[in-house]
Image (cartoon, rainbow, N blue to C red; front, side, top):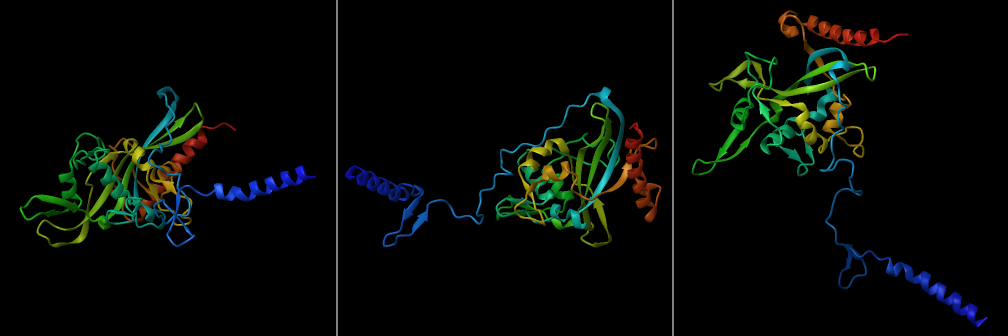
Amino acid sequence: MKVRRYFIGTMVCAVVGLPLFAQNVNTSMTPGSSTPIPSQSPTTNVYKKENIIPEKKPVPYAYIREADVMVAKDVWRTIDLRQRMNIPLRYPLEGNMADGERYSLFGLLMEGIQTEEITPYEYVPNVGWKDPFSKVTNLKRIFELAGGDSIPDDEGNLLEVRYDGSNIMQFEIQEQWFFDKQHSVMKVRIVALAPVYYERYDEFNQELPVPRPQIPFIVYFPQCRRLFATHAVYNPNNDAQEISFDDLFFQRRFDSTIIAESNVYGNRPLTSFKLGQDVLLEAEKIKKDLFILEHDLWEY
């Protein structure tokens, strides 16, 4: 009987003492208070974000053999950042938000160019999109074309160059559609990406009657994917379900309009032979032709 009581008493003491040994080692006590204070840095999140981290890698592309490509078509599109679906790509307008946790698409590209993670190429008007990677550009030229504002010190040395992202209203992309007979599916891959800056003042600082669009630089999209995969784009529907810039483009979560296609006339833009509403109708026709092309390759 005494042995049984001794055994029960020992078990009770062990159970009661467990919470004392289970105290978090990362907490400290304030003198004169019994409330533990966590030693970790304060944060505004109640959970640790592990979805988009600096070590995240983009989804790799599947290898494509030339023999497996039955049909291919080059398409150029414009992404209007004023469209509701594309607004997350536009903001914040200046720099970054929350110590680099949020960037606009243009701000992230500029960050990659300044850290030399992305190579910018100059848009040559005479060549256009026929050979977008023919000439490498530099930051000085980019800031000149994108309305950058230089800030010198007292001795005239350049301290900082600021840019205004509010005049970046569009992006142009070049993509290639192709039918992969190995997987029997129509695929698309973005090749090039370029911001469109709307210049509002001329060289004499006079306001233009109509803003003048120009492309400050072009980037090779596959080179940007590593940077895009490690930065989140804002989800207007749910703060807990973040996706990266790479996920957004990979899953085609943007609204765009076709502006040109590869053709016998030298890939001329639709605006060179269509006006007004006819441009949109021609863009829809090209989109429908791509769908019919894939549909006709199937047997039922």
